[in-house]
Length: 70
Image (cartoon, rainbow, N blue to C red):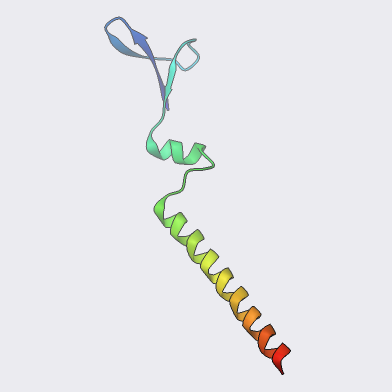
């Protein structure tokens, strides 16, 4: 992570303690900082886990219906 300040000639890299400095982060740093950022692999894993839970719930429901009909 590094900080920039808007200067007359453009942007100048400064210390992050400088007031009015803009904090610049890379995409990897953003992923580490943000709790809402998901990479595609994590999203696929969460989706797969949800499908497994829904499948188990459906199977339990079908078993309950079968046992009720007996």
